[in-house]
Length: 521
Image (cartoon, helix red, strand yellow):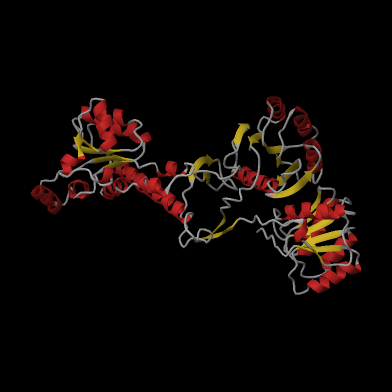
């Protein structure tokens, strides 16, 4: 016979509740219930005791007050092993409650409705449910609390067994209960924060639920455990809502690199553009009149580094493009595009059956919901706005006597958008809307210039350079001149700006300032 004598069932999501209640009834467990749950159970022929009968008080305020009563909470919180608790219950004629099955009003679903009014939002903030769940979970050695309908099957088995329900199972259910209430409160507080006057400020306490999407084989290295977590709802197309059409399971590094590729491509929406990413840095990027040309030029940016890369495109992949992608000695880990034809998927999968093929939909930044950029540090969290500041041709300032020709201006803007996505210190060389050389993650800017020039292999003659931050010395400008660079775009702001600009003038290089920095560490 089950150790559970009385159960309280009060659920918003009624999936599986009837079957669970039938199992309780079969084991002679008294069922207490509220409102819609009680009505549902009675319709299915289940005998139910109304909460109002237990409390000897009617439900009030259209159901706002139902279970908030000592006859309920004393029955949940009484410690069975403590004689004083049990004596008080007896004196007050209160019975224990041994099982609580509860889930909450659909707050998250309510706030997704278009033009929803605050009145409706507030009515979907559950009070009694979380209070009951917390009381039951606090007393989990004596009370079983269930918040997830996926656990009903196991709960039914436990109830049907003749042996007592084990402590560890009750503890696990209590953990899930507190996790559930914490998530619920986190969604509410985030909604209210986003609806107050100071919504553009950073919150004093940052609470945000993330949901496990999948366990990963390992992290950056095989000795590190890892999983991929997602926000409840992605505000823009991204790695979190891309659809895998074919290929192996995505790895930790695949996800990180693909995110870098997609965020980069969001800078280039007006023309067909392709990006080739390795270790989150672009080793190839090009725009063209058509997507095949863009892909060919992007892959030609640094074919050696492109081995084992992520390739992202901002136009649909058809049969012709797929044939171009699989030609030659390439090896690609992941490929993304807004869409793929069936024939394209077949061609790509035939060449590399392990290739992850991801459909992303159209890529654009959602400027209405910018969100935050988070960086974990040991014992803390760095939070900042996403770096989505736009710089247009009208915003840049010519600071040299030499003025860049129109083709240089177009390439400067192309390179400026790219350098934002390269690890600092970052130098990008571009020509004809194609990256020809990238220097990433160096400790000195002149080293990045040297590496970019080496990667360019002569293609940098007549090209332009973008630098993510100012030049502290003119040495990098001298190196750029040696490499045949014709124009440079950089933030400015160094105490040696005048010296750097003077050197650019002496060497015949046009220089433009953005007064915006794009560090990416």
